[in-house]
Each structure stands twice: as C-alpha cells, then as structure tokens.
Image 1 (tube, one colour):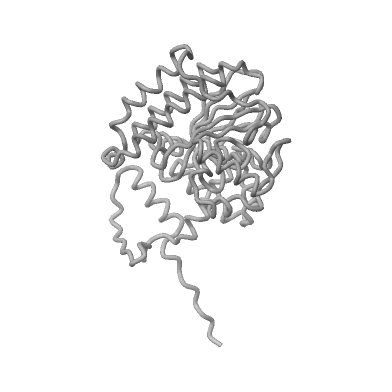
Image 2 (cartoon, helix red, strand yellow; image 1 turned 90 degrees about the vertical axis):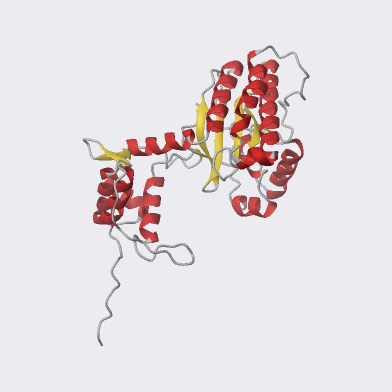
Length: 348
C-alpha cells in the first residue's frame, strides 16, 4: 500500500516569526494572503502554531492561586516538560520568540519575557486616553487611602491585573502585573462577573470555586447571590474570602474601558483600616462609576470612545480624593462580611 504523504505546513515557525518581525519594524513582507468566508487565512501560518506560541507565553504569567506557576524565568527543559513537547520543538519556538523580542535569554540559559512584550503592554494602555485617566485616579486613590488599588480585566477565566498601586498598610495585597486572580473570591472578580449573564458566570465558575479563606464562596448559589447584589447596587464588597482579614471593595468598569472584556477597579487592605479610609475609597469608587456609566450611556460619547468625558472624570472624581470627606456619606463598609468578603490579591 502506498504511503500517504503528510500535508506540508503552509508556513514554518521561521516564516511566522519573519512575518511578525517584519510587521514590528514596519516592513512589507510582500506576501499575498487570501481570506475565506470565515475570515481565516487560506495561506499563511497554521492556527495551531499560534496556539502553541500562546501556550508557551502563558507559562510566564504568574497565577495567584496556582503557586506552581509563579516563575518568570524558565529553562528550556522545564518549559518542555510543562507543555509536553520535545526539547527540539521547544528550542525552536524559544529561539524564534527571542529573535522578535517577546522573550529574552539570560547568560545562564533562562528565558523570560522581553522588551517587545513591554512595548505591546504600553501601547495597550496608551491607545485610549480614558485608560490613562482611570489609572491616574487609581494612583491618587491609593495615596489618599493607603490601600492597594488595582485594575483587572477578564481574560482566560480569571481577573488579570493590568494596573496596580501598592498600598502602605500592615496587611496589604500585592499582585504582580499580569497576574491571574480568582474571580469568585475577590471583589474585583465579582464586579467583573456581575457584568456577565448568569449562564456565562456558570460556565466560568462551576467546578472552580476553590476555598481560599474562611468566607470564600464555594457554591454557585452563594456566589450568584453576591453577584445579584452587586448588579443591584453597582458595588462589590468582600471580607476574608481570598485571605483572612483582607477586605476589598470594587466597581465594575464598563466594556470598552479596557478592551471588549468586562473590567473592574478595586481597593483592598486590612479590615482594621480606620473607617474614614474605607469611606473615602467607597465614595471615590462610586463617583468614578457614576461618571463612567453616564458617559457610556451617551450614544454620541460611546461612539467616539467616550473621550469627551475625560475632563468630566477628572472634575468629578478628583475632588473626592483630594478634599476631606465632608459630603454625603455612603453606607459604612462592613467588617463582618456582608455580601462577600476577602482580599483582592495575595498577602505579602
């Protein structure tokens, strides 16, 4: 029987890297690519190759729950073992990613994320002026309250920290940028879940409600009760869900603030923080939530990315942080665990 010939890969890893490298440097590759009805490339690199590259790069992203995945510098053999690849394949991928700057190689043959990854992250934050405004207010809120303030967005079934201002309290949360934080045990994660339909929440969380502290929600009914409360109030609170004694408050950030995925702005710190600190945090978060949602509800503003509301965000949110808290008081932050309780990140 004649042996069937294996189809040749339409684009090697080297060609794939050449394409990306050329695009990065603004060069033209001269390669004509046809697209079918589904928008996939009929010529060019295989999707499986890109997926493999994604799996490899994910190994360099820390996970707040999986303590086996906190290493940002890895050797070839370790990467191959994690992915189940042979050393030769792994080496080719690593060399290719190093050539375009997504990875760097140390003198002792350890690989880590490279400068190109930093460039991409910087461009992501700079492409929307509204993001810069939110980050500025995040930093100001952190100074005013001494709490850790973070921005997280939904990606890969977790909340990914994309900006953070570390607090200065004795008990604080310290998430690395890019770290994956559990959705079900953090105020930011629940604020994100509150923007999804119930069926989407079920798909993301069922079977993944690990117990991390004394108040962690480990059943879907208890988690859904929290989420329904956040939808009604527009505000999330947690106490001792992610770490004992660690509180967190958060607001949902509308889609479009940080990409097309739902996001959240959260403050976290010790429950023993003076009451004024939590009041300032809640007032500040509610102010920016009201402004952002007012902006996205304006059709004209939503059409142009709500950039016209940047000044309004500064005008409304800034005074809440810079001036003494002498306005209308919000509900006091519960330290006994109202709906939810827990930390927004790992305890240092």
